[in-house]
Image (tube, rainbow, N blue to C red; front, side, top):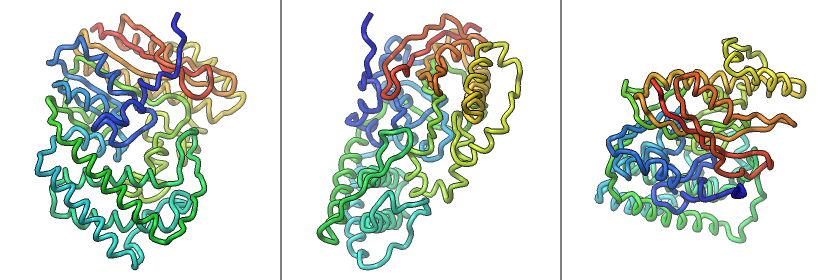
Length: 409
């Protein structure tokens, strides 16, 4: 048997230099090549669904290959990003983006002597950027917004994606740990040094992103803002293929990695809104979601009838942490609701592909792949296969799996 390795070629790392796929990274994202492999034998007339769109990898691959794809996402920043990635960009739009990038830089330089008009209301924003970098970025953002007021939305999208790339590259944040870590920034020897470097970086990034947007897409992908539990945002279509990756039950906030973008682009205004967004997402458990979890009860006792081993898992985790036991319970309640909603949107014979990882709390392994496979069977999906894809980067027991099946009826 082949030894299981980390296989970074199946993760977001493989997307970083892959045209539109590399516009912005999200650690939980899978590689475009994985979606391509799953579509190899599919008819181009198939309609594809991704109910956990994330950065839009599934939809973009489908559009590149001539498929029709619908995506659902609850995070408003990711809805915006996924929509931007699957748009058509005419040549005139690309040229205008590069031209306005130069103008934004010139306008920012003219305003350096003045305080910025607006700074996002992020908690402890001083940990993210030094004052000089923050002021430069704030001036740049204001210039982009002013210049784009009368421009096509596609131009603003490309410039803001370039801004977001620059924003995170010049931050003190690191994403190599389940919680965001911050490094101390080295002070510049000259006051304007960082400012000049940031603006040049933005120009290079805007040119690269605009040129990568020129390639025409052969299919169409739509992104719907909505809840994967109900999927009531979809327009009543039936689907032939599902390719997705739901959140894993690992208590990692899916707001945390995109938090700066949510604040800078105006999707969040305070920490309470961030907590509400995390609570709405499957697997969310930070901020106000933490206090709400402590009082959570099992809504439908039949869940334990379908997953009898879940009761023992929850009880074992509860001995060490009541909060985490409620978190695991809620996760599988939500995923069951999602799969039942999904089952009504599938043609008989539809192919189902879920990329999901297991979890470990204290010494208790949560076999997510097995439990999701059982929930799929409950909703009429059979011929289920569970294949290990790769070892994850943290605890040695943690593995990412591909769970696949066929809708029976």
